[in-house]
Image (tube, rainbow, N blue to C red; front, side, top):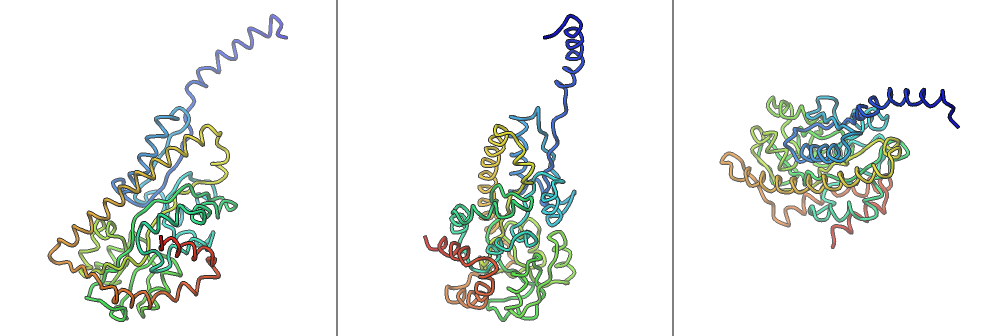
Length: 330
């Protein structure tokens, strides 16, 4: 029970602290990514920021670092695991140091179209992959699309042996490196930001990428020959630090989940539209040759690359590869 002297002292303390509590700065949450704000990933991040700050702006401020101005995707994965940043969306090939299971997305010709990718990612197996790194500090919150990858080169090609001897840029993934070695091409792991310069200087003569990346990064200026191969998928995983996420109140976590769900749906819709539109724009260019192989020709490419499925079955997990194959047969 308060005595006469305690009450005024407590009231005085509250009077002193109340303005500080009311004017407390919101917690800064860092979202790092490597592309421009007008890309599907950039727009997804901006929508997420807007939704969180509109509903929880008194407690959280989202600071977005785009265009790799803070760190690249390899660094971001480590920074998330260590709790130095709060959100990132690296490509699915960037998690080799934390799990081998995500290499399923690098296997060539495993997914016939983006519908199959969607079915797999939303399946129990695909959803389980989001939590496969939680014990190491990384929690997946959802998948973001870029699209299916196409092959481009500085000289004409229609068959696998046409690429022999060419130097192809890849992400730093042993699956992707071996993919090009199966074609007797030389794989050159390289950061995305370096690709245009390497193409311009002829340090590499080919690359694989989505229609939107080929168009927005102007790779076509030095890669006039393209094939509609749809041989791989370039998607991202939106990740956070597991300790940070589990430390949120249930009410705040509910708000974050809702904002992420809406933002990812928006980003994926933008990605689908952009991929379609950019493919059309490239096909309209007079100096660009976009080759569409017949079913038999495409089967030749599939036969050349498919041995990787067996090679990585034990490392990835047979049940994961089988679930991905099943998603391709609705």
